[in-house]
Amino acid sequence: MKRRGSESSAPMQRREFLKLAAGCGTAAALALPGCATTVGKSSGKVVVVGGGYGGATAAKYIRMWSDGGIDVTLVEPNPAFVSCPMSNLVVGGSRDLAFLTVGYDNLPQRHGVKFIHDTATAVDVDKRTVRLAGGGELAYDRLILSPGIDFMWDLVPGLGNADAQATILHAWKAGPQTVALRRQLEAMPDGGVYALSIPVAPYRCPPGPYERACQVAWYFKRAKPKSKVLILDGNGDVTSKAALFRKAWADEYRGIVEYRANHVLAGVDAATRTAKFDVQDDVRADVLNVLPPQRAGAIARSAGVVTANDRWCDVDFLTFESVKVKNVHVLGDAIQVAPGMPKSGHMANQHAKVCAAAVVALLSGQPPNAAPVLTNTCYSMITDRDSIHVCSVHQWDKEKKTMLPAPGSGGVSSAMSELEGNYAFAWARNIWADTLA
Amino acid sequence: MRLSKSIAAALLALAAAAAVAQVPDPTLARNLAATCTNCHGTNGVSQGGTESLAGMPRDALVRKMQEFKSGTRPATIMHQLAKGYTDEQIVLIAGWFAAQKAPR
Image (tube, rainbow over all chains, first blue to last red; front, side, top):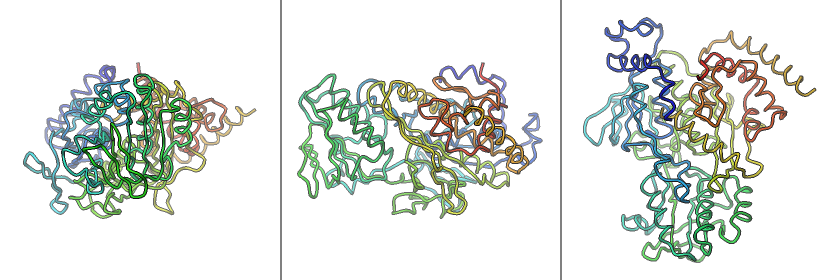
């Protein structure tokens, strides 16, 4: 990212800045060659809620692909982007939070995105406005919601209050919780048990919990070899890269990791760090890490776009517009996925580009791309340097009107390797820049 | 033998794409190329650790992708991803990256 500076020429930055200051299509823009005379140029106001992999990418690409013509405002409460992908390395202790953190400065400086540090609290889809916690409203022609996930605390009895949540962490949104979970592991005596509860799919990042188990085991193997990692999976089997993870637990982490399927969490007792189940015995852990069931972030509810199981948002995959509410698009983990499509950061970035292309087309009176493609590439770190991947390519299916995995494409690693570990870090470097720089 | 076969396939795809190129959506190639840029950098300018695609001659990229597709070029992941694109899409992607400025 630091190297990117030299690639963006100074004149371009100045032009972007002038466009931001003057606004393309106004009288002031006439002074800018290449801006005032383009026929069919996109214009209008887009508000993006959420500066994660989906929202930040959408904001950047709409500015890029409209040649600065569309006014884009990004609303994000966090001061900097902290990546969930790679955050298990912080839990394992081989990286720190700074490694995962990328500033938002490039979006306004290079791309002219108007960045607002605030929380969107409500959407009025008739007036087409977004209300902000800090006061005021933003008007939009098109609204893009990339709200990520909220946790369904009511489904985990005993975990609904702040005290319990301070003891039993999720660390499933990277940031302070990631560091706090690391501290719990550091404070745990050797010979202790780290238990990880995984919700029934779909949840954010299918292989993420199993990667976390590997990273904690990596730490235990080196620093606390008498300790155990206990995976309590609500699903009937490992939901992603199953054979590769099982091999890692059998070889690399033999005697450390134990996997138990069909453990749907029925509640917790925070005081004793106990996980409770309807059928199986309770499990008392020294560090209990619970990933609660999840649904689309709250702002999606306010906009009325939560249409699937009262949890996720159905979208038209040609545009990522809500199937229910006009002019409101939804990206990332919040959507109801098509077959074989994971809830991942890479996917969210890809959603954002299809959506950005569609929004730019629609705001200049053009039809959206009739044949979009999405890819997914997901690396899981097994050690501090060895990795495995799963990947897929999804093509629009005209008849079924959805995205489907392209026949014969995609797959997983043949085995974990340091070469793929290098690619995993390259993936991170590149997607962080593609999303934010 | 297999190499020349894949080159033949690539040439066929080039011819097909010439036909496709007449067709409407001028942003299709750009949109397809953007599916590569998570890993290969915005507009094909890599941040390191993956190959920059910006400025790569079209036929060279088409040939590489066809070799990934046929399995003649060793890979950890690209053989699986390349199979997800049609020959016409690969030509459009390669043409778009070829037209971008190569990184210094």
